[in-house]
Amino acid sequence: MSKETTQPGTPISLTFEQLKELLASAQKQPNIVEQKAIEAEIQREKNKALAVRELGKVEEERLRHKRSSCTHYRFPMTAGERGGHMAPRERGESMLSGQLHSQKLATAICCRCSMTWTFRPTEQEYEYFSTQGMKGIDIPDPSRVIASSVAGV
Ligand SMILES: [Zn+2]
Image (cartoon, rainbow, N blue to C red; front, side, top):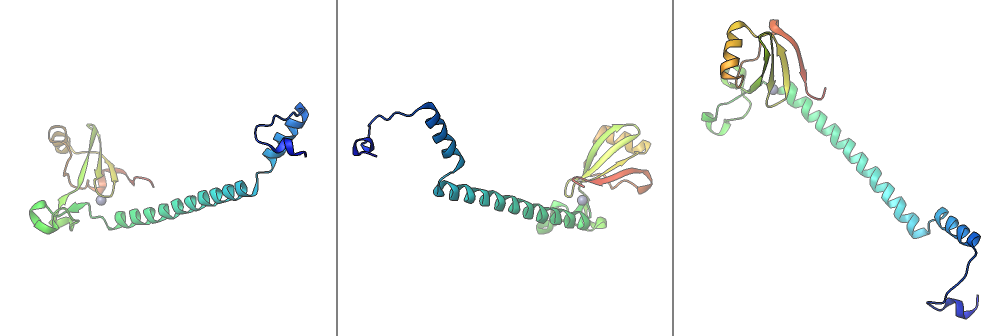
């Protein structure tokens, strides 16, 4: 290559084929720096995916523990420091809420662990739910539960 062509701003001429070839080879072989950056990016993405998966496992475990340990009752706010914390069923207030779908169907959900119970309300329950709502209701009797499940399972 002559000296003139390396001067900045010196126009060069290429045939269309040469240009095409040049572009193709440039695309095919990213230089070392680019290659390293790409590999680092891929590794970062892999690590991120791994971290997300680990986090998912931890979250799943945490949820499982929460569900299996949830009594669905909490100490009332009047209990002072323990207020709002999980309580044994006989000493706490219900953390359930829910929705009345019809005279024959209602769903209760625990606000702490997200467990749900789909059940048949009694006549009295229906009257109560439709006027007072379902906040703080008791866990429905198993004999009237059609299905129970936990969100995400
Ligand atoms: Zn619960």
